[in-house]
Length: 356
Ligand SMILES: [Fe+2]
Image (cartoon, rainbow, N blue to C red; front, side):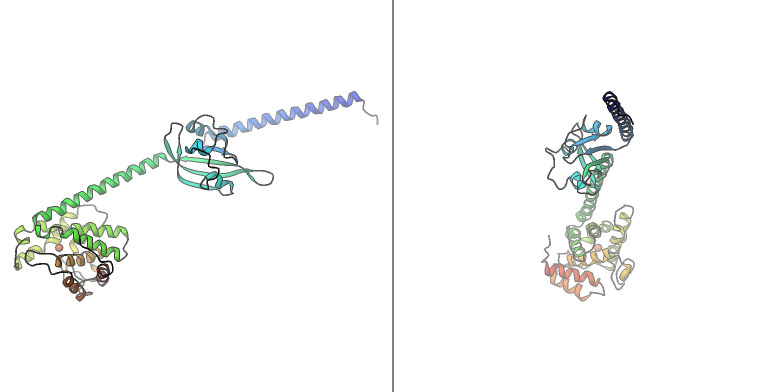
């Protein structure tokens, strides 16, 4: 076989170089086309996306991210650009990108980011490693932000409305309590003090906070129905007659009738109606017994007796706490719920409860 001449070899080398250059340009063009296709696709995604390198610098961002965080984001630190930090969080263990580089897919709900105009926006953020080097070490992490600002705003508005409603409700309850107490100055403060003791008992019993709040709320207005009892009877010194007593006995039902149309979170009207029921069925208005009586009403019943016996009444001086406790201990399990009595004894004994 004939050896190629020097000129021929040079020509072949040149052709190979040309072919290599042509292939290089072709693959670069294909790469550009491919990249443009993926960029276009990622620009249609309804999420803000950034690709971040190990130095926490952004190496790519979709259009949506560029618009909200401000222009070309490439080469900028993601924590400074997207989260309004003063410096890159190169050492922070809370950084979602750093966590992700450790190999986890990380999700942070309700993260705050800062727009280019300085306004805060709320996101659910996810970060995940998307490329690794030849040794398997993560090179790039993608951050995907889903905007939940509108949900957050609605949530905050709802919270504010709830607080306002709660304040309004508590103002209405206070007004109701005062309405009874201005007609019956001898028992002024009785409902509030009863409510405080009832709350203490409920806490001592370990009841859930919601239930404790309901007991306190019902306690503040448990005698609301006395509004229908003539003031002369409420403040009459000395013993009252059977007729007058039967009028007073109407107050749980009257309280129920006033409250039943109000949509409380708790069964306030029913608690008020049952606060004079007794465990053995000897109470009123229905003569309910045991578990027929709401636990909340059983708690208020005991608190009511303790407060009433330890305070002055128009028809008698204060009997004192000792007598009040002797009464509830004597009738533990017959008139009064055993657990409630135990809780109130513990409350006053161990914690040195003080009347306010
Ligand atoms: Fe009462």
